[in-house]
Length: 225
Image (cartoon, rainbow, N blue to C red; front, side):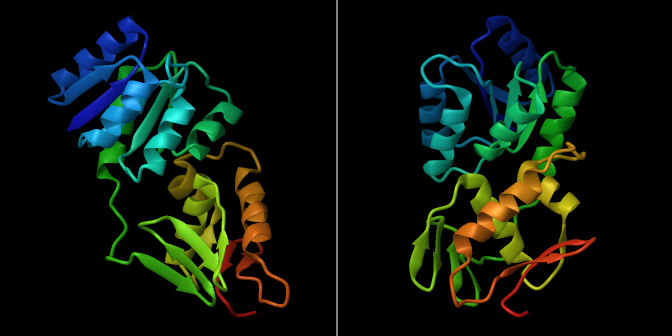
């Protein structure tokens, strides 16, 4: 794989780069967040590894800029900011996975391999529709009844997962894995909080609620009662 490494600590960058190149990967290293965005947008990469605390542009802002430019390459945060809230912030910004420093290289490699195996969504749908709610995947716009709804990146991804599974129950575990990249329960109310925010944005007076809680199971998005 061709991997973009954006890391301002020279020792960490050299360690990661050497280890990945020994595994046969091609690694381009940059130390500045702004340069990282330009490289990620202008070149073709299979994956990016991003620090949080970077000169020029911090890692969260860099990933948001990459997503805003329409680039969907997997991004793995590798950072010393390892609290639950830090991980949530990183994933909310558009990251796909998150590892805190100090780290074991074997875990980093396993996470990279897991991200590389993640299958793309099946089908060629570029527009998802449930009732009068529409999601345009290419332009990343959401409308209900023709009215544009402004969603944050993580809210958009949450809605996309629900709409791709329209009419089916999506469990909390599935959402943690597919939206936040958690393969464990972080013991926070992040799913419930984002579902509540999403409902408040897409619900309309005199229109049916679309996101339904299935008690004890998860959530389902459909236009019936």
